[in-house]
Image (cartoon, rainbow, N blue to C red; front, side, top):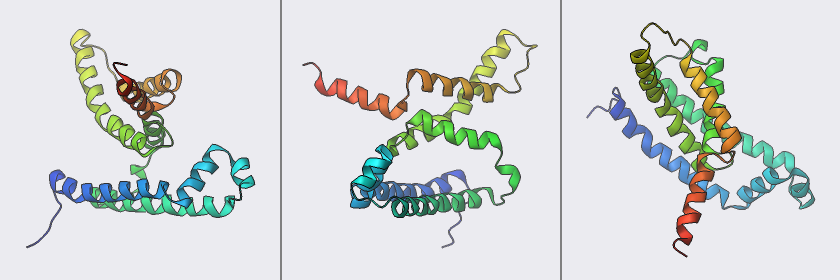
Length: 181
């Protein structure tokens, strides 16, 4: 038959296997010599270079791999929207991507996934907050509440949870792994 991915559910079933394959590819990449070299470069450029890692080569390869991942994501984004123009990519979207990574936790695949889930669900939370605030004070308008909440959440994570959701998850697992002893 004819395959059409014209609904959100169908698009989800198209996208999820791709996300799983790409995530598994990234997990396996970290276990290779190349992945360990990138971790060493992330931790300390100077120490990695002293250890014999060619920085320019590995950074260029990392850029190429990230560009490939971004290209796949962009292709699916374009398919989903059916049209892409400059108006789709404003400064708030760029800030949201950065906040997504900070909230999830930098340097980990789990952090990127948790940050994406958090930032995807946050507009619904903001909408509920708007409803509650309107019920309390009907004459107030909240034109930039979403941007304000993003800023507050970003500051909260920078100050109180610098390792992000992935760091908090790791701490919870360590705590319960040792419990009750």
